Amino acid sequence: MNRHAVLIALYTIVRREVNRILRIWTQTLLPPAITMTLYFIIFGTLVGSRIGTIAHAPDGSAISYIEYIAPGLVMMAVIQNAYGNITSSFFGAKFQRFVEEMLVSPMPSWTILTGYIAGAVLRGFMVGVLVLGISLFFTKIHLYHPLVTLSTFVLAATIFALLGFVNAIFARKFDDIAIIPTFVLTPLTYLGGVFYNVAQLPAPWKEISYANPILYMVNAFRYGLLGVTDIDLRWAYLVMLAFVAGLGAICLTLLHRGVGLRS
Amino acid sequence: MQLMSAIPALEVSDLVKTYSNGVQALKGISLAVAPGDFYALLGPNGAGKSTLIGIVSSLVNASTGDARVFGCSVRNQRSQAMAMLGLVPQEINFNMFDNPFQICMNQAGFYGVPRTVAAERAEKYLKQLALWDKAFVVSRTLSGGMKRRLLIARAMMNEPKLLILDEPTAGVDIEIRRSMWKFIQGINAAGTTVILTTHYLEEAESLCRNIAIIDHGRIIENTAMKTLLSKLDVEAFVLDLAAPCAQLPVVADVKLTRIDERTLEAEMSRAHDLNSLFATLTAQGITVTSMRNKANRLEELFVRLIDANDKVAA
Image (cartoon, rainbow over all chains, first blue to last red; front, side, top):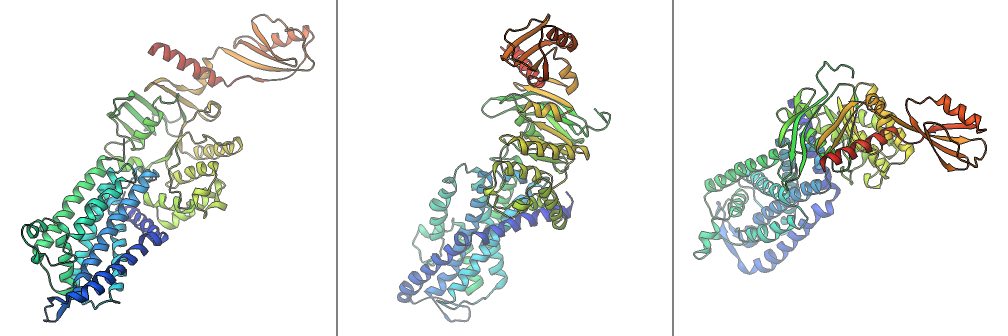
């Protein structure tokens, strides 16, 4: 396939993914909006009003608890939806066997992977914007470092889309795509510094938290929006880029070998 | 057998496939299909046909050996080989939530066909396969025959040089089956090489010029349809009589069986002439008003070959 043909193939996958997201918006966009609204009401307004100031912005202004958790909640929604999109979409294609349409086509493996990742990142973006919009009803959001915010969002969504892809490749039944989000993703997210400052944790929980990749994403995203972070930003980028490179290589190898797809 | 000197549309050499459960589905298959051919690939269930098609279409990884589509190796030049291939699978495998037009457009997109060209092709093939009035309804609601035709329309979106149809008419009524035959014959006449697997042997006999029979993972016959059919030394005819025949007539070298009082079955050597049969019947006061071949000839041969192979295997 020449470059133009590959771009058409890539566009076709992304277009199909976006159409799917919009067609079933009550399953893809509405639930995170409702869930995050509840988080803002309960943790932000009801609990947060009793906590008071939790940090200070670079300009010295006080950061309330609800302001502090807002970036984490956005990132949590992005991560969960990027992951959920790719597992349900790719496993659905496997389950209904229309993944074979792509497997018998001349498309290179990386095009299939990139198309699905782009679809998942776009869902993460739609949900992220939606949750960010909802957060404005409860608190004010600054944008201290737009590039950090955007790059962190793209990297985090890509990492969890890649993880979701691996899950979908190995999944044989629908239960297999529900186990990881329930037993791995949700605990990691809650323990990833969304609701608290990791520096305040006692040993050994503080040290254990540094092994959680979500901590780096949440903090880098928080730095982009609020200008404050619990961890060194260089470490955050290093961890995220390492995950993208490692998981990307794993996904391409699995796809190229046809693991879970070709007999 | 035209253009046999040219690069084969499909060339399969020493193909072996052993699945992870130890089942050896293919035991060293080699065959070549000439460009422009209409080729039948027959065999009983579990013979290895779908595995062979899976390897050619890159859905199954061969253990050893290779397949080449117009000279391009499926193993080493997968993209070039797949660009020339169209596949109509045995099982329905499109997104049931998309409509036929979207399914065709997506398929074209996967092959890098620009959307304007894809839209023209989708309309053309959906119309040719009498699906245009259903182009924008959810494909889940289509009838079985419509779904089968949609698989063919989808496979045509890259206008392949080699079209493989794996039991395309399974479970389809005769009227739709005939319309599908007509379409596929048209595609073949326009230059596309067609490989057909089917369990309807009359379909293979009437459509295909060359044939391979596969059994227990091996090719047991690979020849021209005419050559194969000429091996059949006995033919059976059904004779419709003008008046009821109370007693079974006797004709030398012909085995006659009474189906009912106005119908006889005559089984005879292909070397035996029909004139002497009619002359003997006329002499016995029996008038034949019409006659037809009793059974599908290919079916008889197929059963014989498979039986013989089973005995050898046993």
